[in-house]
Image (cartoon, rainbow, N blue to C red; front, side, top):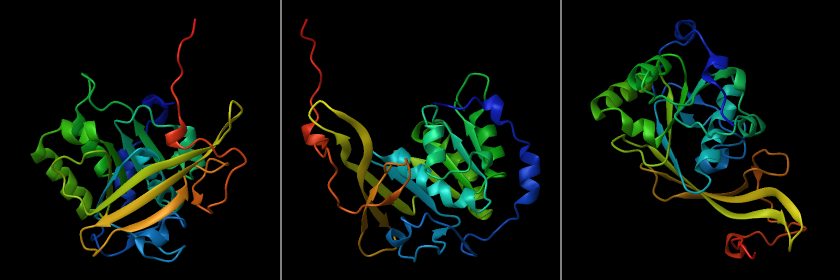
Length: 246
């Protein structure tokens, strides 16, 4: 489900007035408690460095990117999601993203829209900017570098879903689906997903790893407990395509 842009109209000039320029390393943005150990901090401590660029890839990349937005929006930051019309707004809310502080721009590449102008306005008004690969590569490298630099100077965080193109990346999060739980042999329904996340930072010696439920039974992000589900046969290796028989 995508949220029509008209229903999320926001006066970005008002946002710009309320967000002071912040040096990139002056302070940190908060993280979801489940993701905190992956970043090397304690649950409840901030750990997402302002000015950094994060790329999320893998089969659970979109959910991982939304999880990064949850704690900042809960703490009062504004966020923007651009070029991802299929993003699940209800799923984002279940993960903890505050929708009243999130601006959704489904299609920044429409004929009547100037993508550079849209991104320019958002860069000055949000602290977490989530972009699709199509949007990041749809503007010239020069324009993207200028926008990226402005976001860094204001202490924002850029999150890219998919190939980052020419953008320099500080953190890479590979989110891989291990198994969907809840479906048995012809019965049950999908309840939760086991996801393995690997964090690779260019200033770290080795990647960090974490297993999570994304989502869990409540649609939230939670720590993976390793407990088998009542119907635990929905691993990727066991999925079989349907075939027409008549």
